[in-house]
Image: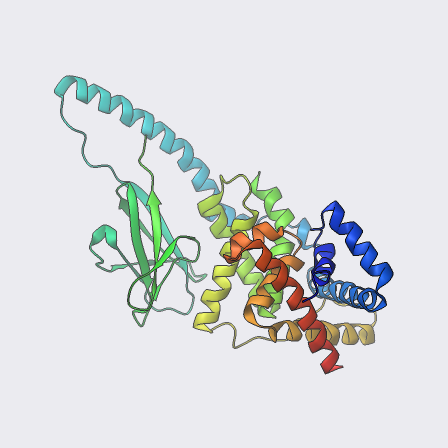
Length: 196
Length: 156
């Protein structure tokens, strides 16, 4: 590929450095075929842009759906403060206990909500390193195809996957860290932070 | 960033990416909602969640592709009603042609172009989302545009 070719896409994507802009303009002025190619690709980009713009008039004016906020946003905010209060209370209690009885605190655990969108499934379960890979059934969260399970997890790194009707492991699409499970599937890797 | 303003800024960009990846309006709308819901659940406190929401959307596309369920009932996209039905028809045909041509691209080129054309991410961020080098992203995006041009020329 001619190194100047890529400049056309960099121009379209606002990725040209100042010197590259000069190179790009020189190439346009001195190479008629290059100029023709650049014009064609700009027109094509307009067409690509029109394709989604025609399907989404006013899309950017919409607010985030309230249903989704109620489901996940507000409880999170509430939990944030509740979590802070609970953590403060735990800290005071732990200090009090340590001073009075000089005993170790019980093992910690953090409730974690696992959610999977799988509308076609009849049954979904979750299995992970946190319980020796025993499968735990998940429950339907309403009627919109979501499944959920709330598990209390100790701090640290946990590997898990969801299991749908045919027991085929499904990695969590919202967790970026994954690894091969050694059987052709993928496990998700979840880090649970220690509560302060 | 407040999640509402993040949602307003990125919603149509994520939709544009998904539409180019799937060629299906309804599926793309569903996946937009799922992507933002999941992003809110897990990464609401992240300072710049743009690349993350695209990574989530990308994973959802591949997960859906794997189980195929919603890809099979793909339908031609519906346009908003216009005063001129003939213009509507021609425009709809043109959009279908572009979206179909996108689906004929090699997977890695289609993805690079879908992300670049969303105008939401830099090449560096696209490299993070796709797990390849920035130099590789530049080449893929441009190859995709050239391949798309060839495909569109062949069908006209």
